[in-house]
Image 1: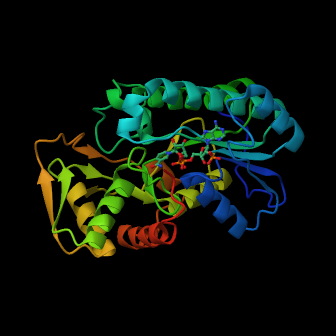
Image 2 (image 1 turned 45 degrees about the vertical axis):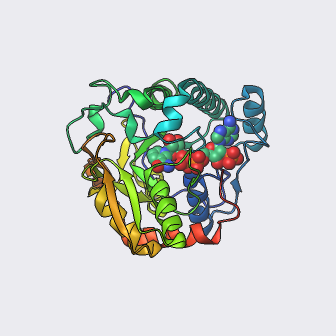
Length: 325
Ligand SMILES: NC(=O)c1ccc[n+]([C@@H]2O[C@H](COP(=O)([O-])OP(=O)(O)OC[C@H]3O[C@@H](n4cnc5c(N)ncnc54)[C@H](OP(=O)(O)O)[C@@H]3O)[C@@H](O)[C@H]2O)c1
């Protein structure tokens, strides 16, 4: 048996055990929380960053000592788009390292039974062959604009593997593709491509603008997963998968940015034309995860891009006054 292979058979989680969702107000954490409530978990624990700053090691250890969670999903992280990552690399490296190391160390001390660490597809090399398999991690150079964040996430995956090896705890890691959905960050500075496009098209629809101009040619291909699907995948993995290697979580299919823009124009009711500023860079031509491992574990995505986008735009409208800035 390889060193990181622990003697554990995945099984349904105990609905009455204490389950800590770190980052329960975020895009991913809130979706996991909603799902766990729906699935009958009776003892969910969450703390805002204001109540428990996960960078504070003493506070984190005291929290684990007090609550003794049996299960943990680590969905708390400093997250942002390209601009934020490129501008504040120290924050993305240092804060994420601190959060992870504190939570994982405290979880070892508390003997947490099952833990899911969330990373991101940016851990893979910039020029990885497509679709990207889990085994491509650490086989090439990272995308420089978010390398600090990616290195922190890679360290988290290795720490989970090291805990398996040293302590025999059946902890796992999942690497989601681009996520979207209710609870997303629509702020102009911090947002990812999809909420940024929703905001842009929605504003254009409201003001009756004739055109929307997007960066690049619109030809790069990207994969998007609705966050409710992501939450379902997380619970599925916790109950059906065990292994040292991180598991990619995506739909297995990608679309062009142009197709995405057209869908967003449709669901926001924008009737003007879209122009593409081809003097601006395009980014990587394709980014698609290979989801064979996830499919073999018995899970596939359920929410179509148009349905998912529609519910996201509805949520965006309903929460216009309380969006993150
Ligand atoms: N969004 C995506 O497209 C995407 C794609 C791939 C992977 N992921 C991964 O999924 C995870 C969650 O991302 P997300 O999109 O849900 O991010 P998010 O919406 O920004 O939420 C992150 C959460 O982390 C919490 N947090 C941040 N710093 C903290 C601290 N010092 N102490 C305590 N809590 C802290 C925040 O809590 P408060 O609200 O209380 O401040 C926030 O709710 C991350 O690991 C990310 O890498 C996301």
